[in-house]
Image (cartoon, rainbow, N blue to C red; front, side):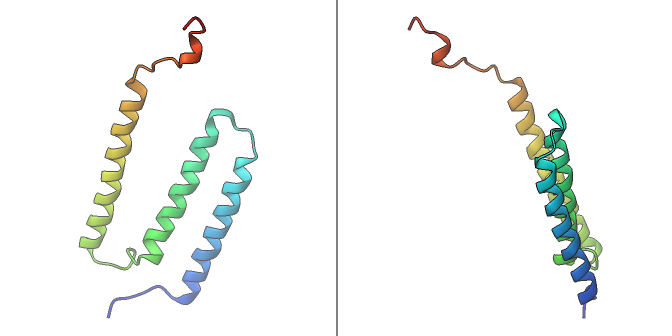
Length: 102
């Protein structure tokens, strides 16, 4: 029988997720300039880590499960990185309203 987290641990993780959700909402109203997105992504990554570790029982699983979880996050990083390179190297075409003589 695999080892699972105790109900007390689940409750603590749930309360932490609620606190991080409140922190996300609060951070949306604080003007941090260009750091708003970074703070929101950092909080979201923290919440995702808690969900994967405890609610998906990866914390108490075998090394193979850990390897697949890490591989999934690496694949997500590759996809986001390639999407970012496409976004930042694209030459944007100005909108038609930029040419009033047409």
